[in-house]
Structures are given as C-alpha cells and as structure tokens.
Length: 237
Image (tube, rainbow, N blue to C red):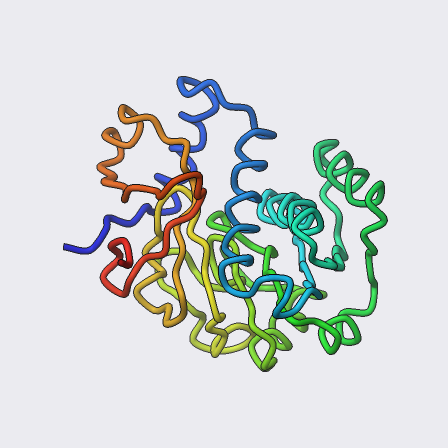
C-alpha cells in the first residue's frame, strides 16, 4: 500500500498542532525543512558535480525554507545565488536574509542570467497553501523552470501545482515536472502526477501527531533528515 498523503487542509492543521501541542516554533520548523531540502540537493549532486545553486524564493514560508536551505548549502561548499523578487514581510524572513548576506551570498534580480549559470535550481516559490492563478513575476519564472534543462528540485510542491489536483491544465506550470521533489512532513496528493526523484523530509513528528493524521512514516537512516521514496511512496531501498 502506498504511503498516505496529506491534504492541504490537514497539512495546515498539522502545522498548527506542531506549534501548539508539539511545542515547535515557526523558526524551528523552517530550519528543519530547509535542512531537509539542503540534504536532498546534496544527495542529487554533491559540490564536486556542480557548485552553483540558484534558489528561487517566494514571499511565504516556502520561500523561507529556500532561504534556510541556501545557508546550509553554502556551508556544504556550494555557491548559492538567491532570486527573491517579493521578500516576505515577516521579520523572520528579514533575519534569514541577513544571515545569507552575512555569508556574502549574492541576491540577483536577473533570473534568466542566473539560470544560465546554474548547475541546479531549488524551486521554493509556492508550497502546500498555494491556490488560484500564478501572477507575475512568478508566472514567467515558472515558464522558464518548466523549459530549462537545468535540474530543478521543488520544495513540498512543484510551484503552480494544485496540492490536490496536480499540474494546471494550461498556462504556467502545465508541463512543469521537476527533477526532484522534497515532500515536507508527508507527501501530498499531487505526488501521483510527479515523475522525478521523490524525497521525504521532516524527521520531527511525534508518534501521537503522526497517529492523529494516520501517517506511517518510513525509518530515516543514521543522521539523515531525508529518505528517498519509490514510485509506490515507500522507502526506496
């Protein structure tokens, strides 16, 4: 039996539980999510295979996950570049941005040029809470991501995809299927349309919270914050 997926409604409810009965702060959850993403990127291609990482961040928590991942990637020996056209207003995003600037990690306003120079891309634009129509500047960015030959790793959801219904039938993202996906906490229903390498990150759920949402999570190896899943949603051996 395939691993149970988590709807957008339940994903939001689970996050609230983590920050109430679970005792986590938003900062902690974002740090753990970004750490998981960074480990997936490393698993896909170490710095020896290509150091230049373009991290594309949206204005919400998904973008914050990308900012955290970029910091970890810098410490692993990569050379991240950040494209962050609409910075989030929460002071947390400001602190994450300051951390990157203190490491002299560059922020770019020229996405097309940065994409041409990149060995990998992290798509941290939209997460499980996305719905509706993609607007500029992200519609053009997603068009470029779906047409690039550069490997793309999406955070929790390929940006523009509906969490329940997968890729849009037309417009930006309709043919976007990234190289890799890092599902956070648990896979979402959209994974049935995904065809790349699939990782699960979120090694922080208590047994009680996992049981509440009917989640049977795979065992993580050693100190890994991610586990690779097969097409059946189970741990890949």
